[in-house]
Image (tube, rainbow, N blue to C red; front, side, top):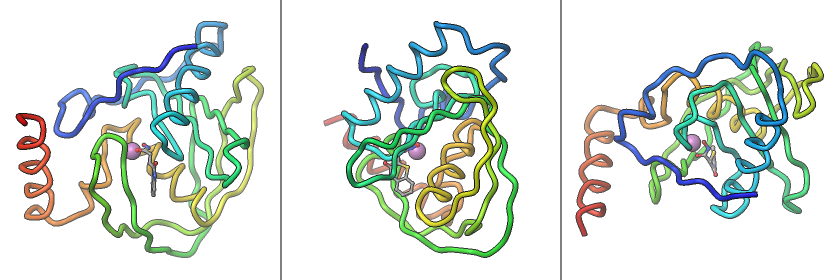
Length: 165
Ligand code: GNR
Ligand code: NI
């Protein structure tokens, strides 16, 4: 297993659109294990492959208190079932900044799992937010894109200053 480096906003590589995984090979399974290790170490509740500069449609998540309920989603698709929620979000690629974002409350998720088997489940609350946040990464979108231009540029400037220090 290995921990991987996480790209930080405004790195242009975070804007790349991820490509579908053709087949869940042992290489993909190993990548998922490395992503889980990286997510738990960070610590975070989710991680998209885009954040580690791998532009494949792979997401991991674990929103449990006990940190022992991992999800691995390959080629995930999200169907909105209904409702809205506003929640404070953070991102390992935008360290130190937390802002409220509005998202769908209930979703249905279809994906392949770590072994390449099809999975389908419904999610709400924090898991729903997390999966929507991660699927945004696969499209090159970040939670700061939902904020005002002013707020986003403030965050960009503060992160640039921290990176220089
Ligand atoms: O660790 C994370 N916490 C979090 C909190 C609220 C909404 C979304 C998230 S995901 C984030 C990890 C991350 O950056 N995943 O891409
Ligand atoms: Ni994120």
